[in-house]
Length: 231
Image (tube, rainbow, N blue to C red):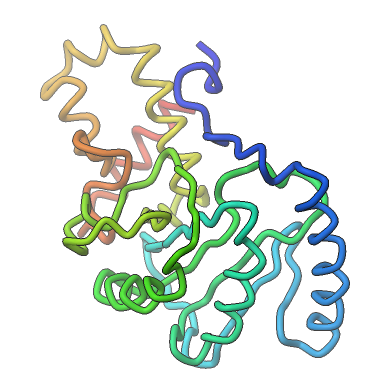
């Protein structure tokens, strides 16, 4: 069963980002980004431009919490500029998509807080920047409310956690796991704990599309073994 038909990774495709109006704006903004690169404001990594505020040094960890900001095409560059202006307040590493190709992917602004408490603070600081901004959906991530990080809806903000010890992003990790579960559902049911137990062991929530925990304690060796089976 192909991954794309069971748990599409790049979902939903946001077609508004392919309109000529957005692409024209992007051409102009990319020229501005080149100047920012030369001055060291941002660093390029393939199709991403990355921002590293002084207070956001990464710490070694097995799981890296992350926040996705999903602003619609008419607001995307305005939100990026607002984030650049708010670096000192946010104090976290983040990146944004800056390319003329592949713009219909839904995960184009990603922030990397250090832990769950920092995730919560960052969401509170992001919320005013998204006031009045039209947003879009995202698969393979949870809302702040679903993870118990906020009682507010926070439209356009989604949360996940990369299993860095596997060197894979959360969304690809979850999409691959769900496709494997679908293909092997009968065999998984016969195991102790069944499919629900397998999901728990892999830090996959059964209630939503985010992780069971942002920074689970231990269990990486067991996940390594199951991940090798998945691949």
